[in-house]
Image 1 (spheres, helix red, strand yellow):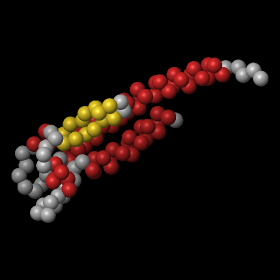
Image 2 (cartoon, rainbow, N blue to C red):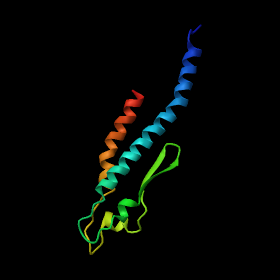
Image 3 (cartoon, rainbow, N blue to C red):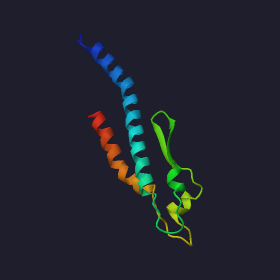
Image 4 (cartoon, one colour):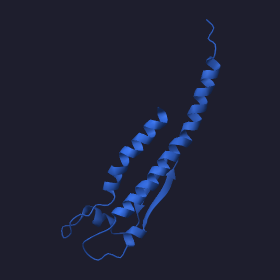
Length: 113
């Protein structure tokens, strides 16, 4: 049996495999940056003493290939996000995550279609 074009098909599949990692990394990076902006916008706290320290310390960092992280380096962000027994929670990270998740999935879906 003789299959014409099989070598070209395999070469194209190999090229697509190598190229897709860069595209996915770009999508992950752009979505992490967008999420960081949303987290910063959400970091407006209505109760207590606000200085802007938490907003200034929100960063996006690259952890590895196709792996980015949006973090708040302020020591008290966990207390703001989850609350304490004396203070109600004022979430600012999780709402941004849940808003960005469908955008991220649609970007990845568009890449593979």
